[in-house]
Image (tube, rainbow, N blue to C red; front, top):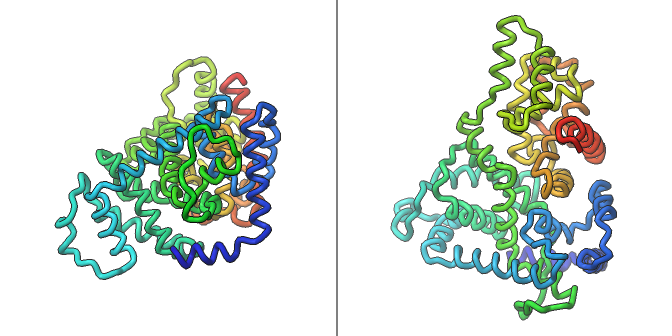
Length: 418
C-alpha cells in the first residue's frame, strides 16, 4: 500500500484539493441550521454529489452518524465508539493470526495448508469462503486496478473476516457468500475516493472539536478506512432484512408464494391479469400481507406499472423473480459497472430512513421498463443473457434513476397512500 498511497499523493492535484475544500464547505452547511436538504437531494439525483463527501453522507443516511440536530459532538463520539469496537475485534491475537494466514494465501506467499489450524481457531469453516473471496477479487481486479493492490485486498479480507467473526452463527452457502462479497466490493470501490491522506501525527480530536476541517479530516482519515467501511457494511446488510433475504434466497427458503399462485392459475387456465388484479385489490385493503418485497417488485409493482411487460416476460418463461433477486441482493451488480452503481446507491440511501431499500426495487423495475423494447424481440435465453451481463453499461444512469423516481411516486400513491 505504501507505494500505492505515494502514487495517489503525487496525483493529488489542486483539483482534488478544491473538491476537498468544497466537501468541507458542504459539511459546514450540513451541520448548520440553514441546511437545505432538497438542494443536496438535487445534487444526488443529478449525479453531482462530491465523492469526497460520500462516506459521511452514507453514514448519516444509515444512522451511523446520529441525527442529533446535526450534532458535531454526537458524530465524533459515535465515530470514536464504532472505531474502538472494530479495533477490539481485529486486535485479538486469534483474529490477527487468521488474518495473517489467509492474507498470505491471498497474495500467494507460500503458506502451507498444514499450518491452517495450528495458530488459530474459528467457529466456522473459512476455507471455502476464502476461495470464493479470492475468486471474486480476481474478477474485480480485471476491471478495477484498485483491487490489484495488496493493501486493498488485505483491507477487503480484514473487513469480511471482522463481519464474519461477528456473525459466526450464520449458515452461508456459496451463493450467499458471493452476494455478500459483491456488496462489500461495491462499498470499498465507492468509498475509497473519500480517503484523506494526512501527516502521521494527525491524531484523535476531542469531543468538543468545533473546527469543521478537523472534523472532516477525522471522519475520513485513511487510518480508519477499514473501520468506517465495516460499520457501513454491517449496517447496510441488515437494512430492510437484506442479510436474511440473501441467506434465505440462497438456500431456496425465501418463499415465492406468488409464483406458486401464478403457476397454479396457469395450470387451471386462469388469466394472469385476473390473478394479479385480484391480488392488487387484496393488497389495497389488507394491513398485513404475506409477500416478501422481491415478490412485490417482481409481480405486483411491475404489473401495476407495466402489465404488458410482465405478461410478455411470463409468456416467454422468464423467471422475473430470480432476475429481480439477483439485481436487488447484489446491489445491482449484474446491471452495470461499479462507477454507476455508486450513483444508484446514493439514490437508494437517500430514502432509506423512511423507506428502507425500496428504491433499489424501483431501480430494478426501471431497468426492465427501459429495456422493454429490446426485450420484446428476444427469446427467454437471450433476455436472461442480456439482463445478467451489465445491460445498463451504455445507458445514462440518470435516465434509470429518473424513471425510478416516477415509479416511486406511483407506488407510494397506490400502495402506501403517500
